[in-house]
Image (tube, rainbow, N blue to C red; front, side, top):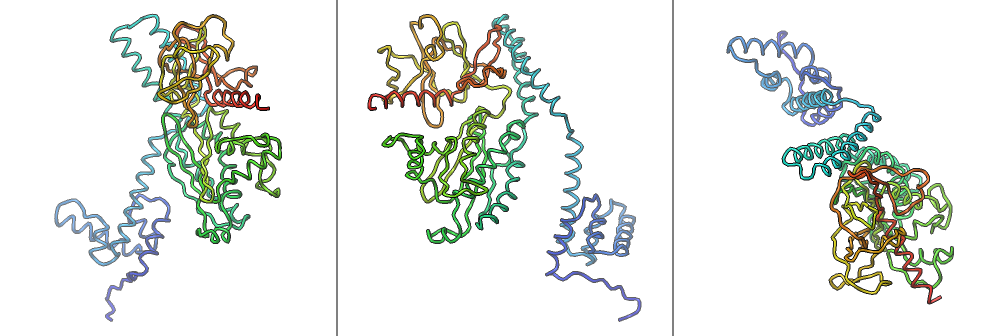
Length: 483
């Protein structure tokens, strides 16, 4: 070897991955050269030599300098894959800083104030529309702009739910260590967006559902293998948008719910009468009863009968619903359906006597005319299907005689269709939700109120509890003669 030889040590091919991972783990940097020097791929002398070659080539050709990465690869100083990794590191740094410069942090209270003002604007716009009548092209343009302002303001509160779902990775890991189970957590739909206020308030119910699935649902590795399953169970958290709502699913591939065991426990605790005939869904809904638990022993995770009833109560408080779908030996899916926002909803305005009510539009499937029949009958024939209905006049004790021609607004909740008998159908309406006072906090069938353009107050119906209470009353009435 001659004394004036130039010696360069190039990493072997089997070490390329190690350098690539080192570059990915480096802090942000705007220059490829700094990334390569910081990772130890090249020395400062080698980089200085490459810069000298770059400058000389630019002077000779009279053109723009060749990228430093190409020079390093051409002269055999750095392998191509490592240069590509450094370029990707530089590109991600640029994208991150670009996003930082286009976003600002806003106090949540200011955002809430903006939403309130937009709500008042919607009310004022409705009032103006009533007074101006059709209003011509100018009025239509104002209404369109108000709609755009409303959607844009609500979009400011929307955040991806993925951050909340990823918090459960550690929960799953810690619980599995405590229970000596092997569980893989799969998260999908993290890009689905919902109101920030909802995200904050749904975390605790989701935490209990995840812990419940790990404790009650997924079996131990030995038990799973005895039943022909893999030793490692799977817990899935999935979120997606559906019909103006966001649906969050907690699914496991465990043992599923034991219908007979749940029913026996309910009879033992006198939640249901012995010999009662219940559908599968009614039996599975018993797990949400206060104090109900099928666990044989009390542990840190289960057995105290506290939790599932709180989950349902919290979900209902958010104007949501919760459903259970299970298959014995195959697993259970608990599905939470929530509105996208708690501020403004699309509603369907109906009239009963002098009173007005708002039905959430995403619950309405169709409207039909009430056929003539006996006054005491609370069901009708809808294209060969028996449809129970609720007379809102009787439910809310509204004085006056029913209209000669009544209508039925058909709503759907958890796969169950029910009709609401009203006097008048007044059309769709953007509804600004005003919370009820403490005095009315125990009302089950009313979720809030709104101010109409005429200045009148309309109550917003909570379809879930309304249908559930009606079904429970009908069940009790059918069971009474048998007793």
